[in-house]
Amino acid sequence: MVQRLVTGVAAGAAFVALLLLGDGYYEALLVLLALIGFNEYARMNGFPRARGDVLAGYAAVLLLALPRLPFGWSEPSISALTWLLMFALLAATVFSKNRIQLEHASLLFLGAVYIGLGFRFMAETRNLEHGLFWSLLTFFCIWASDAGAYFVGRAVGKRKLWPAISPNKTVEGAIGGLVVALLVAIVFCLVRPEWLGFGRAVAIGLAAAVAGTIGDLIQSAYKRFRGVKDSGSLLPGHGGVLDRTDSWLIVFPLVHLLQLLPV
Image (cartoon, rainbow, N blue to C red; front, side, top):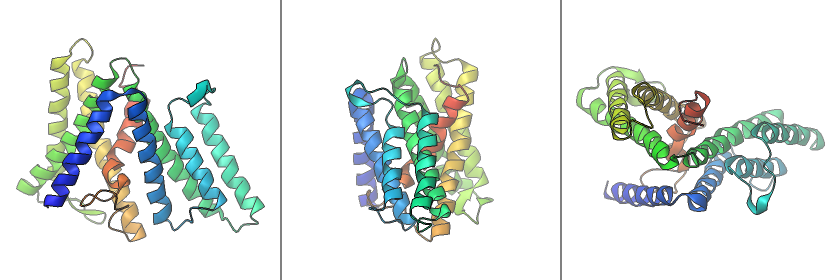
C-alpha cells in the first residue's frame, strides 16, 4: 500500500508538472507513454519486438501520437497515416507469405490506432487556446469519476456493474463517479464561465464519466482475455501505462469528436 501511494504521488506530480510546462516537454512525455503503452500491448499479444510488422506498429504509434513533426516537416493527416499503416500491415502478410497472419496485422492496426490517437488528442487538447484549462478540466473529470466510483462503491456498492469483466465495479459506484465528475465540471464552469458554459460543462463531465468507465472496462476485458493482471510493471503497485491511461485513451478523442472542446 505504501509503495502504491508513493508511486502514485510521484508519477502524478511528474505528469502534472510536465502538463503545466506544456510545449515540447508534455508532448515528449505523451509520445514516450504511447510507445511504452504499445510495447505493453505487443507483449500482451506475444509479438516479437524486432519483427517488421511490429516495428511498423511502433512507427505508426510514434507518428500518430505526435501532434506536429520536428524540423518543419510537413504533417501528414491522420487519415493518411491510418491508411498507410493499414497498407503496410496488409502488405506484410503478402511479402511474408502469410507467416505474418491477417489476425496479427489486425491486432497491430487496432493497437496503434487506439494508443497513438488517444495520446495525440491529449497533446492536441493542450495545444488549444487556453489548452491548460481544457486539459485540466478533462483530466480532473476523469480522475474525479475514478475516485468517486471507488469511494462510493466501497461505501454503498451492492449491485455489480459488469462482474464478468470487472468484479469490483458496482452500479452505485458508477453513479457516484458520474455525480462527482459533474460536480468537478461545474466547478470549472464557475471558475471560468466566459470559457465554459454550464451545458458544455455537464456534457464534458458526463462524457468523461461514462466513456472513462467504458475505457476502463475495455482494458479489463482485454487483460482478462489475455490472462494477465496488469498490462505492465512500469509503475510499482499500479501496473503499466495502459492500466493507468485506459480511460484517457477513450475520453480525449471522444470529447474532440463530439466537439465539446473549442477548436
